Length: 364
Image (tube, rainbow, N blue to C red; front, top):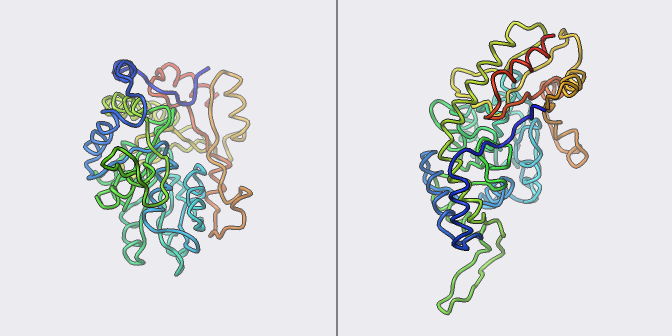
């Protein structure tokens, strides 16, 4: 089996985790929590980073700290993993779905203003599969309408928009370190911001609003959340982050191999990289057009029979039962891509000969 996307463990993971075990610092206290935050903010060139138990928790805290709640609306794409949309519901707000661009698969900034009402409080951008959204247009719209911008940069860690890291352009950026991400802690997430007041507030809420009293006891001024990342996971994150530039280079090289082997293949549209972007190609994603000869799902089955694991594009969230009654604009492109898109194996450790096998199966 050639897997879709599995972790790459080739650095100091064993060393750092063993240190946690040897010293008994396995929970939220310990040096690696602070180190992971500091290393991550330096990598992104941002002022504040706060680790969380997962990426969903980071988005939930972002919405909470920005004061978004009951009766508010948040503009989101429907072609996304459901996590950011669920987080909007966690705070009692309503998602409003907009369409995506056909070449990049991400939120179409040209269509956002039509979704804005007096109740709109934020735009939640999701940089899916590694390509950045056109953030200049997003930020212009946000400024015009006095909206917050939250970036879910989970799938685009390492991608650049006009030289800036995704996740660092809006008011808040959020990341996940699930097992299939570019770098992983097994589980875990991170919230980043250039607003230190927001960062401190997030840290406070994520640790149960805990204040240490003079006698060693705890006091809590308000309701908080148990969204801490354990030291043992942060240790793995530190080791993974040391390898991130190498992993990005490999991902981009593999995408070039895919592009070369699949370009000019009838019925295949390869992924774009617009002039403003560095696409990290977290997942290498193609479109199976009508003239390919078989459907996307038939191709998935044939690849599976040959030992190749793939995944269709995300099912549109506005088509799922919890969100069918939510407001949305025309979703023609989203629904077409959901029916035609396929993610091909994209592990850092995939071999060139495996990419050649996959492309041969597709072309033949």
